[in-house]
Image (cartoon, one colour):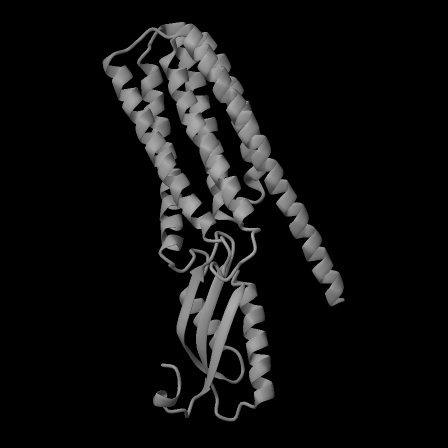
Length: 305
């Protein structure tokens, strides 16, 4: 029975990893090809908006590559110099990606304001067609990450990057159509500013989450008080203290604590309490668990306080 469950988990995890790797590879290739198309068309028709969007998309291709690198580093084994391996890299990359998104948002706003002050004639029809292709590419790429976006911060980062790009492309399509029929060249800038605000809101939570994990804060999906109540709810546990919960990667968390056991708890029951607590913590996405135990009548000078 146990062997069957482990086999099922291993197979599922392996398939999931394969899907993620494929999503990154496809996303990087499709978006890089689209950047080339935007640059070529932008140079031919002298469209600054397409060239700016190409620069923005190229930054996102780099962000996807960094996220993919972080996922690959997660698989590297630990050693005597890096006892947790290179898992923390995934958190650093998520932080870098969120910062890149903010920088690219600033670049969009800067360019939009500049074009409001100095409007230039734009061939709306061609811009709308090229950006329409961008919507398809970014939407398909984002869809590849959608299923796993809540399991890893880097995958969520990639998903948000691509989704933001799809919104940008959509805005440029609308702008291109309006410009084609009305010659209101300033419309492109207004839409760009609106889209930049949307990207800012979606990026802010990602930045806060990655910064929190970088500072070894408790992951957002884990509630401190809930963990305390969970431990105290186990028969034989009187109290819990010296609790530390932190992320060692964007998908794995660690936990250390001291359990205060009732005086009459036997050694056998103590081991069962540890096993039960570890099992419950696994359901709260806590994987690496270290538990120290002590009895409620021990003097603080004789134990780790």
